[in-house]
Image 1 (cartoon, rainbow, N blue to C red):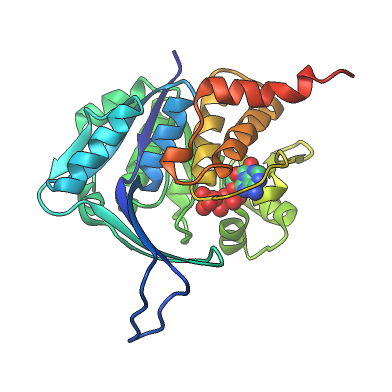
Image 2 (cartoon, rainbow, N blue to C red):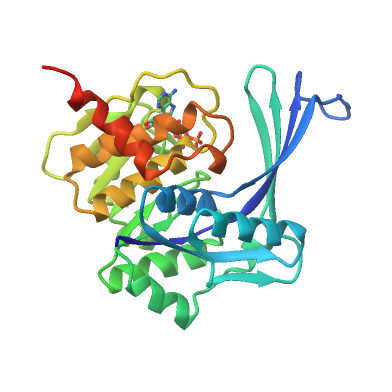
Length: 303
Ligand code: ATP
């Protein structure tokens, strides 16, 4: 079975739905409040597990109620949490205000995630058994770099989601096989708002790039070949939260299974399109059978 290791964050998302976001010093009355397991690392782990891989998450939760709930939500989705530490203090939280126009404002407090500053021998051994290591930027940068370099040294493919956007140290780019920014992150990293130009700029540092373009699909570029654009399935989106994490999790599984790049991108696009049609983050992520059914549809149509 395909094996994916995720080195990343686990947060409890505390989501308040309001008619409009409050200004500084103002109080507004919200309509609804939800606590939803999230964090980019945990989301990618759930996406990959539901897409059919054996998945382990390396990270940390706090010794609080949220920590216990986050761990059990991961386990419920089939993610191995043996190397998810429980540390003193609070779990990571994301405080999210969603307004009636679908806009949001977010404060992330890293909590336990901030304690993951280096890998253990157990973490390294696990990474060595994986087909791919998935990384994002919600853990301390030192451990993200260490994870990427460890995987690279062991011949394990590294897939980096450069979010939240920030400058990337050269040693991290040098250990990244596949970089998957969204178009805003790609523009922030390169100064090029146009995705083709951004992709070309990123290829100076990494061998493969996928820039996700929301409802417009994605752009794949690799050195020495024409870039490929894959359109997203046309669907009615109700909640795009974690579409990017669903895409990356499914893409990593498809590539690790040996699917050729265009097919893997279409498969990941099918998974992400399913997730945007449902409310929630990890709760909206599709299972493998659903992805297969959705991805297979175009081929099933008569010529
Ligand atoms: P998020 O931050 O919401 O997780 P993101 O900004 O990281 O998302 P996007 O580029 O918005 O990433 O979306 C990732 C992928 O999800 C896209 O490449 C596309 O395949 C799919 N997707 C997003 N929005 C839609 C949509 N409205 N319809 C169909 N597919 C979508």
